[in-house]
Image 1 (cartoon, rainbow, N blue to C red):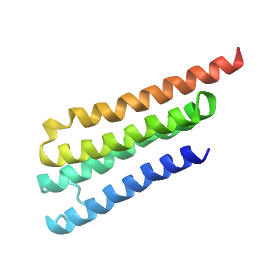
Image 2 (image 1 turned 90 degrees about the vertical axis):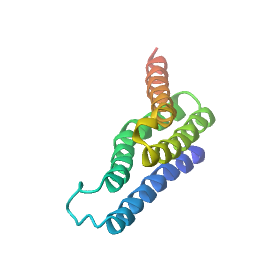
Image 3 (image 1 turned 120 degrees about the vertical axis):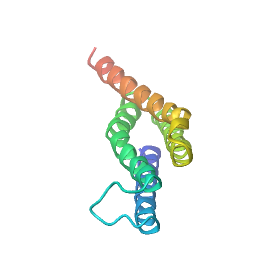
Image 4 (image 1 turned 30 degrees about the vertical axis):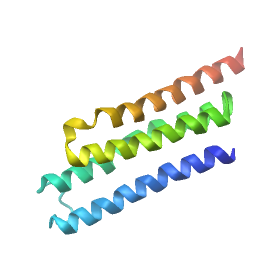
Length: 127
């Protein structure tokens, strides 16, 4: 399960980096805690970070379920696509939120494949 561990921790590290970028944006745009609004460019960084948190709750269980019940290498490979998708999403969203579509697709499609594949594999193991 070493590949799943690496992909999981890379996804968590990516989340941490996005959080650090929120802190940088908070200082740069003078948005004092606990405020989460006040400057559109700060709000974009905040949403990138928060949306990544929302996606992780789907991604991580899906990754591990798929890796356990279907195939670890395929699961890890799909997980890498998710991580790349988050970078594409973050770059697009920070430039123009309307352009985030490709990054979002590169995030949700892998997550849904992992969840559905893991569920299918778990059910198949019962049969």
